Image 1 (cartoon, rainbow, N blue to C red):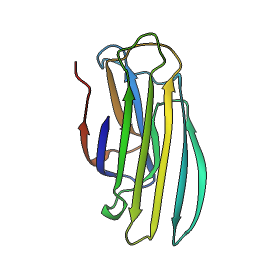
Image 2 (image 1 turned 60 degrees about the horizontal axis):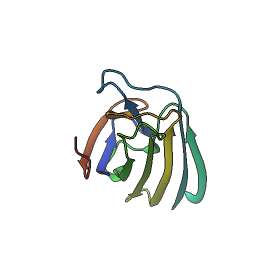
Image 3 (image 1 turned 60 degrees about the vertical axis):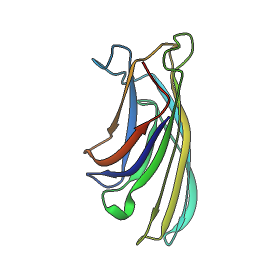
Image 4 (image 1 turned 30 degrees about the horizontal axis):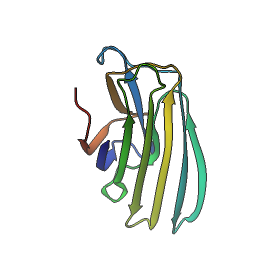
Length: 143
């Protein structure tokens, strides 16, 4: 379980991607994923919902901002990474409330890798720019 707080990006409207490695981080899988999420929002700009999906990474969160009022919070559940007989799977949830923008947003979903394999590393990268702030704490996984 990974708990993330105060996530800010260098560029506005970005997403975080999670990719896995089977060679202790020497390389990361860039295809073969499937992930789906549901997003809901409400605020001064209206309300609504949408589905989000990806095939080039396991987890995503879109609409991450680059100003303090847009700081996001999130959780990532990492299920049994050392099991080579099941498909790697992660569940996730992100949320934020924009103080000045009057918007609340939540996204949750699940992602996986289409080949049964154990993995020994994962990385979180933005789809563009850089992550300029994120406090992250990993619970429950040991080597």
